[in-house]
Image (cartoon, rainbow over the protein chains, first blue to last red):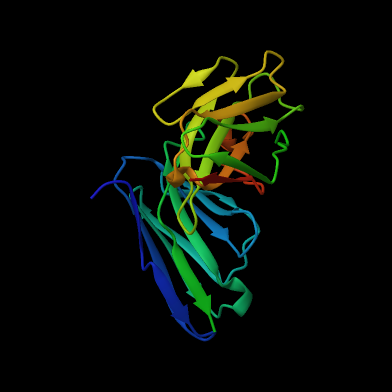
Length: 112
Length: 113
């Protein structure tokens, strides 16, 4: 498999649930990113990881908890989310030395 | 970041060239211009980037004016599959700022049969 993959593609969860989004990249990149895209809003950068170290947290609420166990995998752990957190969550990877990023297909999250 | 300004929407006939403009009048000398696009409900796709010379790849051409204050993305023969939101982005230059892409509203390009 090539490129950037994300699972699940769709997720419906209640506000008291705990779930995780998974991202995997097969491009040999060292940097990985989480973005959020709410309806009719621009993409917002959430987190940046370089060589497994978090280098950016764009004032994201603590109910979103990222994890990067290695350069190929990135998780976003979700707990006690709000309905306004419903959005398309996109993962991307890059070399970390340029601004060319490769995006996954996204996870469409609905919080009830 | 250098702010970019793009028209909210454009139309193009299939088979014709689509020319998408972007203004970035506050760009500094070492800042690149990047273009991405996002087809409905998919992740964004990198298209092309440049510093001051014109660039071409298999997807598009990028024309940057001599003063670097504006650029044009050219899709030489637009197809229906090119219907998407096109984003012009000028990221902060290098160092620890790599990868901090700021997506604006972009230009919605609609290609008509």
